[in-house]
Length: 427
Ligand code: AMP
Ligand code: MG
Image (cartoon, rainbow, N blue to C red):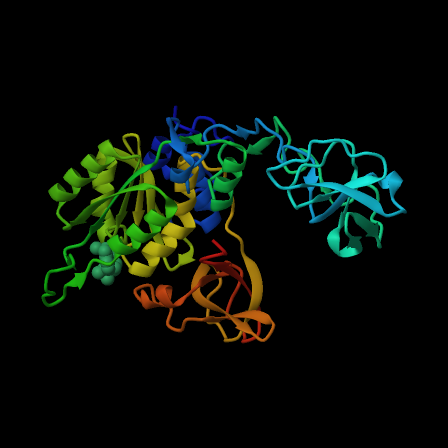
């Protein structure tokens, strides 16, 4: 069933595509970034098929069922230090060392009254002792140890299950597997997990002026760069990608490629052909085969954007300008893909830093200027990459963040705090 707007229970995508005026606040010619995200969200339902993968093949995959622990971690009380394990009540005199416990080789004999054992980090604590003193706080003479700085009773012992208890949910459904999770799963003895099947995403470029790599450029032609940026962002998103090449602005060729793409994939992404001059043609094509909304978003770069369904496939029509294509991918498609992959939604972090240069901007639209975060003494600051034209792809390559300037913000003086959205974190 088509997901619907909670506030308009009878409205579905086809109604909206056919008659945009059926929603009071819906204006395809002045759509805010937030509104557009909200509309797209309404129509996304995650894949439901699952498969089993080995831990080493699970990076970036999305858990279809929660993982609960079948064991305690740690499995035994064990020593947090190299030192001596003893009964706190017997501290005071020198203690007789009756043996040694190693990690993986427990001490199992009796520890008589007034005695202790030497113990290594990670070694099991025998049940009759209760405290560990670190070696540096003792002196030893032959078989005897003197406790110089007595720790509190129970000190330096890692307790059974203090990291993870048996039955505890360790990773929730919808969690995307990160490197630490792979180690965590292994620590529980889990060798395989159930994840959602990968999302199949097809994409192609449109434009008579585009030339594929390996061919010489004729007058007025340009190399098709969008397919390569898209390849990169889709690879990072962890989907199965299908590059359908570039298609000329020819109705028959476009129709054929579009229909084939929609029939065989979960998502179809195109670049180009949604700007004012070309949209009519795409609109007619998409109206014939699907339910597609064409929006002019109050944003820069990336004003034109199309979203809808062709059969059961989700369709994203991104602008052709190389920066606009990437910005609209990051701001709309990336999140939508995560949702379709079954991943729990998580906004990408933003924070405020000082921008060292002045910024020129008109109010009334959101701008995603390209910025370079840099360290200035102890502080992180940002500067813009310079020219911000939507065709200047080198600005994306130079940048390590977006400077996000909302609709209310106008031009800013140097030294103003601005919101930044970094491209990369630690991992
Ligand atoms: P369009 O959205 O088709 O009107 O294209 C807008 C601008 O982006 C034009 O200057 C196109 O030449 C350029 N463009 C469109 N597609 C691509 C592409 N795949 N690679 C590089 N530039 C493109
Ligand atoms: Mg074009």
